[in-house]
Every structure is written in C-alpha cells, then in structure tokens.
Image (cartoon, rainbow, N blue to C red; front, side, top):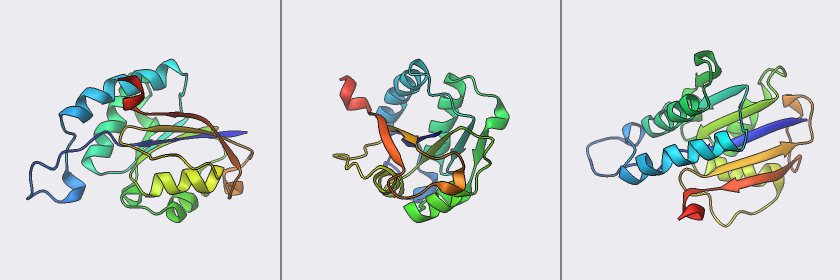
Length: 164
C-alpha cells in the first residue's frame, strides 16, 4: 500500500501586478495559516519519504515550511518545475515514474491539477480545494506505476477554515 498527500500552496498575494504568476509570494493570510497547517500535518503523522514541490515561489515557500516542521532531511525535498500548472494527467504520469522505494509521497502544487488528480484517484468529489488544503489518500497499489483511476480512498481532507 502506498500513500499520497496532495497539498495546495498557502494563500498567495496579488498585490504586485508587475509580478508574473510564478513569482507571486505568500500573502499575510498564507503566512498566518501555513505554520498551523504544517503542524497539523506533523501531528497527524503524515511524514513523507519524498516531498515534491512546484518551483513557484508560493509553492516552494509552502514546501520549505512543511519540510522544516516535519524535520525532513534536505534531500527529501525535490523541486520540479513541471509541477507548476500541471494538469492531473501530467501529475499522474510524474507520480507513476517515482521510485517504488517511496511508500508515501507528498506533492505541493496548484489547482486545478491537484483537485482533479484527487478526484481521479478517489472519485470522491470535494466541495472545493482551498489554499493550504491537505488531501491524504490511501492507495490500493504496491508500485507507483500502478497508480490509476479510483485506486485510492480519501483518508483526510483538511484546510485552514475548518479550524477558525
């Protein structure tokens, strides 16, 4: 059995219209929500063997806080440029190519790709996939290349507004 945790980056800022989308930083709410979300992930024992992150500033900031909170070794965080703006099909192909040594993968990325991938793998429709949301999926596979439609079950869906 494999495990997959999909995390949407924390809330980002739109304050600077001159910044392209890739370089948008976290806003105040994102910076406020992120530490609590990372601590909940830690408290729930969601410790990945590998943390894959988009290289977009807001995703990488999210991944670095998570890696720090989870006390992950530096070599467990892998930044992949192809995660930025990836469709669920691209995410699926990328995950299918991961080493079977990894039992639990965590992906920090963007919508709609993450939400669509979560639905594809579980066929459970979530009301929405807000920023800083955590979707943890149990997978009925033994090898990542077996990742396919409806092979997973939602084990946890959490996001900051649940804790207000």
